[in-house]
Every structure is written in C-alpha cells, then in structure tokens.
Length: 384
Image 1 (cartoon, rainbow, N blue to C red):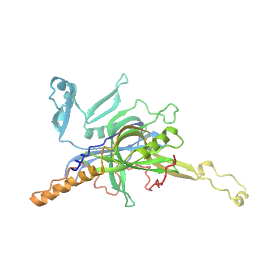
Image 2 (cartoon, rainbow, N blue to C red):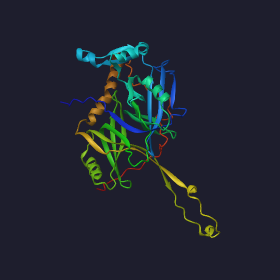
Image 3 (spheres, one colour):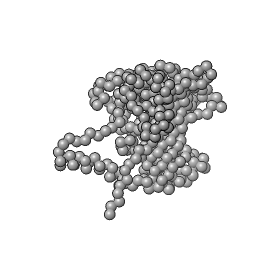
C-alpha cells in the first residue's frame, strides 16, 4: 500500500530591526495610484519602499503594499470573553473610516498593521492598529530620513528577472509594525546594539561549503500560503568560531532533505570599501613633489548580502519526503485532467496579490547594495 503524501504547510519568516530611516525622500519611496489590468483593475493602491540603516555599513530595504480594501476585519477582545463563538467582524471600508474613532473607544481594533509615530506629553508612544493601506501613507507623511525606528514584519520571497536576463530570488521584508524611536540612534556609539534579527522556517534541501570564505551555504525550501515553493540560500559563517564551526558541521553531516527546520540569525546587506594598495613607480617618485592625499586613494567596493544562520530553534527529522513535493505538484494536473474529461471551466489558481508582476525587469524591493554576480560556493569536501 502506497504511503499517503503529506500536504505542504506554509513556512513563515519574521524580522525585527531597528535603525535609521533612509531613502524616504526618494521619488519611489511612496506611490499611490489606480491599478490597471488584471483582477485588481481599477482598484486604488499604495506602496511604501524605504531603507533602514541598522549599522554604519548595513542597510535593508523594506516595503509595504496594499490595495484599498472593500472590508476591514475588526476584533474586540471583550466581545470574545463574553461570547466564545465570536470570530471578529467585517466592516465596509468607508464605514470603518467614518466610525474608526468610535470603534476604537469601544475596544474594537484592526489587527493588520500597527503604527506609532507620535509621543504624548509623558513620553509614551501613541500607536494604533490600522489597515496596511492607511499605514503606508501615515508612515510616509510622518517620518523623515535619519529618524530612528523599530520595525517588525513578515518575510516573503519572489523570483524576478534582473538586468542581465537571469532569474534570481528576491527577499521581501514586509512591514507590519512600525514604531518611531524617541531619538535617532547613534550607530557609531559603542553602547549602540545593532538589531538585524530574523527567524525563518524552511525545509532543508542541501548544503555546501565555501572553504575560502569559511562559510556553509544552506539551501532551504520555503512554502507560501498557496503551497508554492522557492529555494532560498542561507549562510553559516563559522570562521574561527568553535561554536559556529560545530553548528556548520552538524548541519552538513546530520541534516537531510525533508527535515523541517527553524533558524535565526542576522540580515546583512553591506557595502564594504577596501583601499587598493598600488606599487609606487620609483621613476615617477624620483621626480619629487608631494604624495597623493589620502582622499584620492583608490578603493574597491565589495558587497555582502545574506541571511546568516546563527542558531536552530526547531529540527524535525524527515518531516517531508521528495514524494510529498511531487504529489502536491501533481494535484493541479489531476484537476486539469478531470476538467478535460468532464468539461466545464478550469478552476482559476488563486494567488496572493502581486502588485509588481508588471515590473519583470526589476526587483520591487531592490537593494542599493545588491550584487548580480553569482558567488562560487561549491566544494567537494568539508574542512572540519
């Protein structure tokens, strides 16, 4: 008897960052308009695209996109306590806008996005729940470059075609909680503690060692809400660190395809400048004159964009098999065959709204530090 395949379940990724807001004065930082074409034709949308500098040489691009909703889901904890069958309520968007203050006073709140951009006289942050459609505009109108912020949200992944015509994987950091800091952070202060934290669940696919860079490249398969899958790369930078070396070794030797894993680490998106040492031409030096000033020294800029694995919080061995993925991919084919045999219309595939599907040649959350060159991270042996 054949083993029944396991249904694919969504894997989730979250992030928590703090730093200085950047790029909010750029032309593409905020956009609102009416969508043309597709199933959202004629629907208003708003899009926010900003940067957050978490360290002197680390800046992460963040996004917030939403169509104007027809209805808003509301929640009231007091009603839930009184009535266990309470499952929230939906209010037409226009009605919500007209009565939101009354709803707030009654303890009815929006759970979608939470934003705080003002402090009261006692120095307490005033934050409130709202629709993502409202949040993008509120943030844009109340935040300036170099103001401090704490930002949390969900991580999603997408594929796009870069300028070289190659299909690559993009990582999207979608804002869900935005809180303005009382004062800007001094990123160079010794007491400043950077926060580039993320957690991600994925299905382990494979790993490979980069001996030169002393890192283990891990390939994890993420599954979205609609059971679509994308393989994403993560890095264990072990260097000379004994604990990280142990982690890299264990992942390499013990993890197998299909293991369900949750990792945590840092989001790095760095531009690193290095001075280029040039050999002095003795003939020219003998002519005399002054040495070149330090600011004229030539530099090379390298890029480091990765999600590091610093630890593991979940490891379920053999959670999925190859057959599970193959079976889930065949589900739609079977349905299509039935449609051909029995007649009728083909069931439309329901996909999450992609506001950027008409921008085929660029990443909607493109990073100013991104590097299109592929890294050579393959090796045939482990140096442990």
